[in-house]
Length: 269
Image 1 (cartoon, one colour):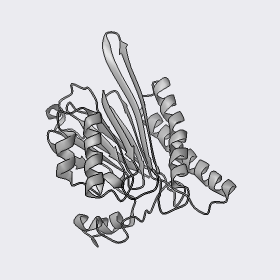
Image 2 (tube, helix red, strand yellow):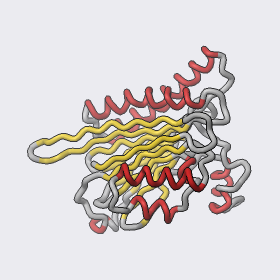
Image 3 (cartoon, helix red, strand yellow):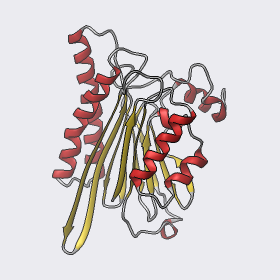
C-alpha cells in the first residue's frame, strides 16, 4: 500500500491545530499478501480555545479503536461500524470532560476515519473534513459536510459553487466536543487504481477538483503527491492549517466487473 501524509500550519495560523494517524499492517498469509490500514484525521476548530488539544484527544482516542480492529482482525461490517461509532462517542466524551476540568468554555474538532480491510473502505465522518475517491482520472466527493452551508445547499438555498465564498462557510452543525451527534458511516468497495484522500477544509477549499484529480492520479508516490497538493493549497490560500492522508491500496478487482452492482453503502445516523 502506498501512503502519504502531511500536516502544516499554513501561512496565517500561529500553530497547526490538526492531527493525523496512520496504522498500517501488511502480512503474508497462505502465500497471499494482505493489507489492512486504519487512518484518522482531525481538524481542530481554530475559532475556539483548545482546538489543537481537541484534535489530539480525538486522535489518541481513535488510535485504540484502530489497534483493536487490526489486532483482532475484525471484518464483520456491523462490528466495524460499532467500533468506529464507539470511538467517536468516546472521543467526544473525553474532549468534553477535558474542557470542563480545565475550565475551557468550548473546544471542538472534526474527525474522519477510514478502516481498509479485505477490499473495502469503512468510513466514519463528523464535521467538514472530507473523503475524495479518485479512479481513472475521475474524482468523487464521498462524504457530506456537517456545516451550515452544506445544509443550505441540500435545501436549495445555495449552490455548491457559492459554498467556498459564503461568509458563514466555517460554521459546523456537528462536531466532536460541540453539537455532537453520531457520525455518518459509509462502506465502499475498493477497486484497482483507487486513490483515497482524507483532508481538512484547508486543502479542499483551496484547490478545485480538477487539480485534486490530476495530482491524485499522477505517477508520483502518495507522499510526493500529498506534499505537492499541500504546497499548492498553501500557495493559493494558506489561511488555514492544511492536513491530508492519501493512500492507494494494491487490489486487482476491476471496476468494470462491478459496474452494475452497488458500490456504496451509507448509514447516516
